[in-house]
Image (cartoon, rainbow, N blue to C red; front, side):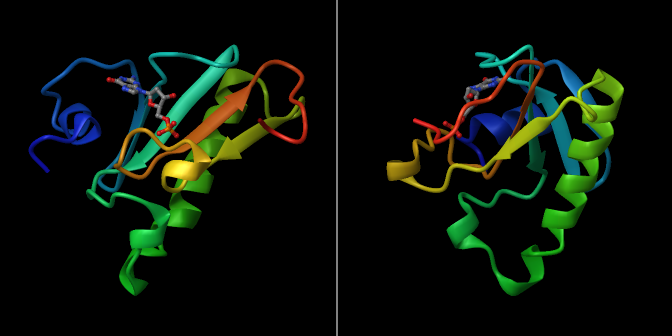
Length: 114
Ligand code: DGP
């Protein structure tokens, strides 16, 4: 999608620190990290939110989780613990409308989230 910032990252039209990439997904460092490890994992396909998934899109989810676990292991946080977050639509705090999963770790997390 032309005006989507994450599509521009996928298409290398704007720079990002890419950690992982395959034909389905890309993972890169969040520009405003909220933890020592803060990656965003996104499908290359432009889907605005989880609520916009069609039946054919659900296969992306296990793929994203597999990438998250791989990155967590590479970053040394798999045993300590990590959190995966998806914000869906305005009340959750979603600001970029290309679905993304936050992988956060490297510090003590709190519950409930704000
Ligand atoms: P959310 O609130 O769930 O929509 O999170 C959007 C995240 O995207 C937020 O943590 C900051 C990050 N972000 C926004 N623009 C950019 C960008 O241009 N590059 C990178 N690397 N991250 C971005």
